[in-house]
Image 1 (cartoon, rainbow, N blue to C red):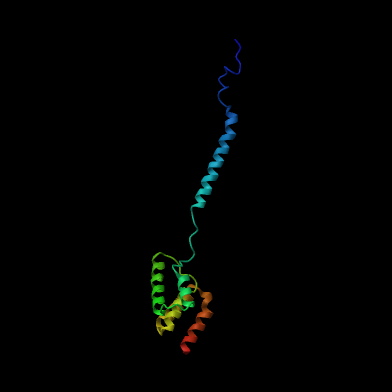
Image 2 (tube, helix red, strand yellow; image 1 turned 180 degrees about the vertical axis):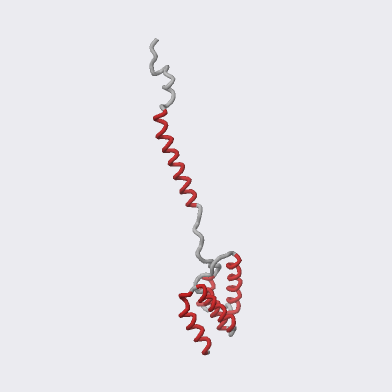
Length: 138
């Protein structure tokens, strides 16, 4: 009785040596897909909380009909929201808010926000000191 490849128990299954490369390729593909999926779903955290700051600047520089007081109140509200969310204020935020208060004659808040800007961004010291001198002389 001759046994040929048709009756051989190995004929219906692939050899273990042939399955290993396919298994490794599948595993490598799975690891790659999972790694890329994990990276793709995570957006980098924002460095600063902007919370409408761009709109506030646009409103100010366009000299829209919105009063300085309304702009300052909105920025104060946004400031509280950003702090509550643990977000850092963007550069210039406190300085802009200070200018809004200064133009309304609230010099205490003007100085408070400028000092806070200087503490958060020490590189702004020259500009902040200039603003403090300018408003002090007026």
